[in-house]
Length: 233
Image (cartoon, rainbow, N blue to C red):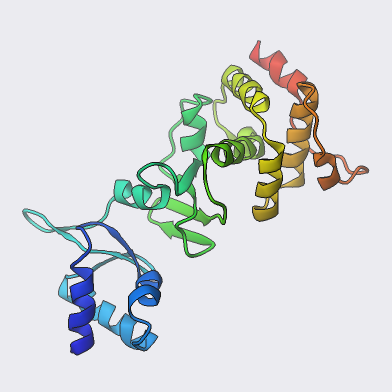
């Protein structure tokens, strides 16, 4: 009972609907308790309604609604994994494509890359989160977005080639090879994505040493800027 009261008191410190990651809470506050006991207490708090489980190992303190308790929603989850100032995560997938007006298609599924994720992959309802181990700043974010778009542009439904072409030109002119190499050492991207990036840089006559990441004898399914311009015009 003592442990239940102690953990419950800590839970009360959280704002309503704020995301609570169980293993982080345990490591930061309750390592003096056995892990099985800690999770048993969380189960009791969930049963009592003091805590709500929104996914495996992920909880929130529910908000008292007029008719029922209200738990964390899509906005609360995104805020936790992306950060209030977009310094913890990045949108990928259709949220990213829409950001640069490459499609008018909308997907119910939301894809995020986040430094706040404790697991390599996490799914919370329609939101999928992949863990990244990089400190995010504007340069890092822009280069990850560039790689994500080059890797996935062929999957975009109703792709606006003009907007894609405009985006690639701007991204290429703001290219940061040192940052890209740092990203490639930390995150997995297909060889075809790197080949696409090399093709883009060559098209805009930007020097690069990324060929060392590729096999000179292999043929990759990579973007061809001449074709993109032809379709966009």
